[in-house]
Image 1 (cartoon, helix red, strand yellow):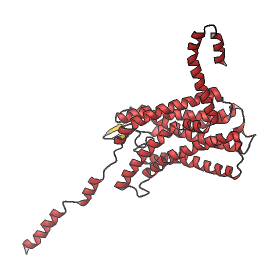
Image 2 (image 1 turned 90 degrees about the vertical axis):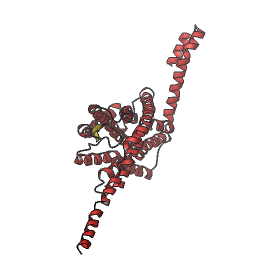
Image 3 (image 1 turned 90 degrees about the horizontal axis):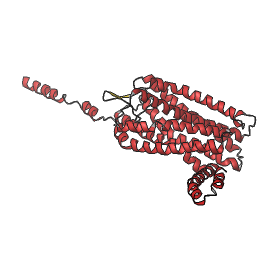
Length: 350
C-alpha cells in the first residue's frame, strides 16, 4: 500500500516541473523595430529630406520673390513651409541614427525631438489658421484683421502662433529621454520619439496633448467650417483654387498623421483598453512604427499639392525656370553677338 501511495506523488512531482505558462512567456516575442528601421528608414528619409528641402525652399522663394507677402494667406503659407523645413532638417539625423543603431548623443537627440515637435505642431496650427482665414474671406468679413491686405496684422498673428508652438513643445524638450535598449540609451525614431519611456504619467499627458493638437483640434475646425461653407457655397472663380488647396493641405495632413496618433494613443493606454497581452502589444508596436514612417513623409507633400492645385504657383514656377534657362543661355548668346551684350542684359532685368 505504501508503494502504491508513493508512486502517484512521484509522478505528480515530475508533472509539475513543466509549467505551460513558462512556455507561453517564452513564446511572447517583442517587436524588433530596429530591423525595419535599419532597412527602410535611412534610404526613405534621405529621399524625403532631399525632395522636401528642395520643394519647400522653392516654395519659400516663390512666396517671397514672386507672389510677395502682402496677403495674409501668403504669410501663413510661408510659415507652413518653415514648419516643414524644421521637421525636414531632422530627417538626415534620424536616418543616420537608424543606420548606426541610434548612436547619437543625448543633447543632439533632445534638439531633434524638439525640432520634430515644433515642425509638427507648427504645421497643425498654421493649417488651421489657413482654414479659418479662408472661411472669413468666404464670409466676406472685410473688417476682420484676418482678411486685411496689410502685413503687420498677419505678422503679429504668426508671431503669436510661433510662441504657442514653442510653449506647447517645451515638455518634449524638457522631459524627453533616449530610449533604453539592451542597457544602452539610444536615440531612435522607430518608436514614439517625443515621449519619455520611464515617466508613465508624462507619457499619458504628452500623448493626449499630441492627439488634441495634431488631430482633434484641426479636425473639428475643418469639419465645422466646411459644413458652414457648404450651406451657402459662393466662391469666386479666382479663389476657388485657393480654397481647394487650403482644404487639401488640411485633409492630407490629417489623413497622414491621424493613424500614427491613434496607434500611439492605443499603445500608451493599452492597459485601459485591455491590449496588454503579447499579441496586442506586438501589433501596437509595429503599427506605431509603420504609421510613424508614413506620417513623416508628409513634410514633402505640400509643395506637390501647390503644383497640382494652384495655377498661380505653376505659372510662377514656369516663369522661374524660363528665367533660369534664359540666364544660363545668355552668356553664350552675348559672346556670339558681341555688340548686343548690353541689350541682352536689359532684357534679363525686365
